Every structure is written in structure tokens, then in C-alpha cells.
Length: 320
Image 1 (tube, rainbow, N blue to C red):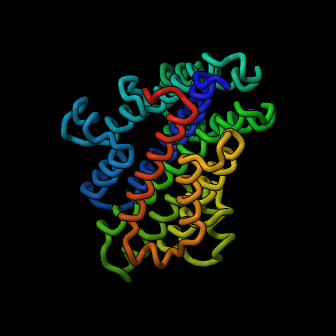
Image 2 (image 1 turned 120 degrees about the horizontal axis):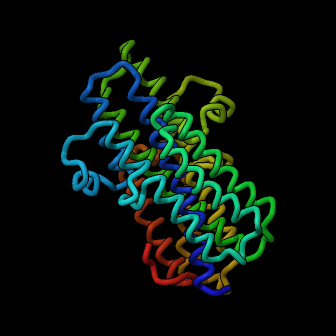
Image 3 (image 1 turned 180 degrees about the vertical axis):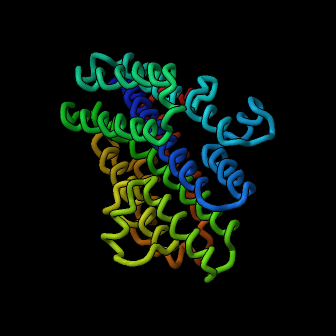
């Protein structure tokens, strides 16, 4: 396959997944901000959201040092000068799809095209302002639809595997960012234990995080117990049967890499395999003992390095 075609497919799926993850992060932050808490804690939550996406500096350049929900929402949803906003991601996904229109099935192209045209209409008509949660559900639904149409209509050839590679590399990155920032926020907000206020906050805080990755029902099914932070971390990092966990994402990255590489001993394969193996044989108590933040920071660095190696081996020089 031409590297140019592979590059467009890879980034089409990454941008679609990034739009979905941004919607999930905004929705959970919005829901958490409605809990009884001080204005300072609410602002910390929105500041943490910008930190997850590494957008504090671009936001400050556009809106100044004052952080308020309305500006953050506008910046992350409809600001076309922000390359990570939902509108920018869906536009870029559509443009990458258009560039390889002949490689995609009609259904895959029409899904991408219709999603972009519809979000333009929704933002212009004020639907986002009227019901933000419903808007975020729509973004998630369109991402689900895109993946479903891809699975249901695409020939499972190299094009298909590059689409899947982009999806799961992006998902691993976003899940790690969510876990890192949300655990850090919870520790800062309620460092004590045992009070009624703390217990109530813990339940709603961790419930909202689980719901942001469609993991609330999964948690109940797996653990059948009250929500505990260490088990949330285990579910989102080490459970291979949890679709959005880091290990599940790396399993998918490995299997799709194996289908497109001509050299099973390549540096890209070695790095992906080593990272997957470390997750596969890790234990959550060991990770927490050595420091969750340090573990996730290192994971993000290694995922970014893996993405760079994939670009060098298969794609065009990175310009995204």
C-alpha cells in the first residue's frame, strides 16, 4: 500500500476517535461540575481538562488566564483554530477520508461526510447550547457508527488494519490521559478519607469517570462491589477484556501491526510488543506503589514514540 494512502487512513481513524474522546472528557467534566463543591474545585476540573489535552497554553492565548466552563466548552467543541476541538477533528477526519475516497466503501465515506455536515448544522442552529449532554452523546454515536460501518463493510486488508491501528493508538493515549489527570484531581480535592462528604464525592466522581469510558456497567459486572479508585485504575489499565483499557488497546495495536509489517523483528514491532508485555504482566498494586502518575507519564511517552515509529516505517513524515 502507498504510504500516502496508509497515512490518510491512519489519521482519519485517529481524528474520529479523538473527537469521541474529547466529547467523553467534556461530558464527564460537565457532569462532575454539577456536584456540590466549591467554585475553586470546579475551576480545577476545567483546568485539568485542558491539561489532559495539553491545551493550556493555546487556551490562554485565545481566552486569557481566566478559566470558565463556557470558554472551555467553546474552545474544545467549536473553535476551528484549535486543532483538537471536536469540529476540527471531524473536519480533518472527513478530509483524510475524501483523499482516499476510492479505498473506502461508500458507506464509510458517507458516514464521515454526513457526520461533518451534520455537526456544522447543529452548531449553527444552537443545538449544542440547548443540550450539551445530548450533543456529546451524538458525537459518541457517530464515532460508534463509523467503527461499525468500517467493520461491517470494509475488506479486511491493509487499509482496514491501518484504520484500526489509528483508532487504538489514539484510544490508548486518551485513556491514559484521563486516568492520570482524574486520579490526580481526586487526590487534590479530597486527600482525607472516611467523611460522609468524601464518600459521596468519591462515588459520583469515580462513577462519572467510569461512565466517560462506558465502563460503569462493566465495573459492576467485574467487581460486584463499591467503586474503589484502585479497581477503577486496574479496569482502565490492565483488564484485557475492557475495550478501552490500555492493555486492550495495545493488544489491538499489536495484532494489526502484525498484519501490515513485512519485518516481524522491526523496531516498531519490538517497542509495541515490549509495551504490551509490560502491561500484560503488571499488577495494579505494584503500579500504585511505584507511582501511578510516573507510570502513566512514561506510558504516554512510549505511545507517542510508538506512533512516531509507525509513521517512519509505514506513513508519510509526521505533519499532524
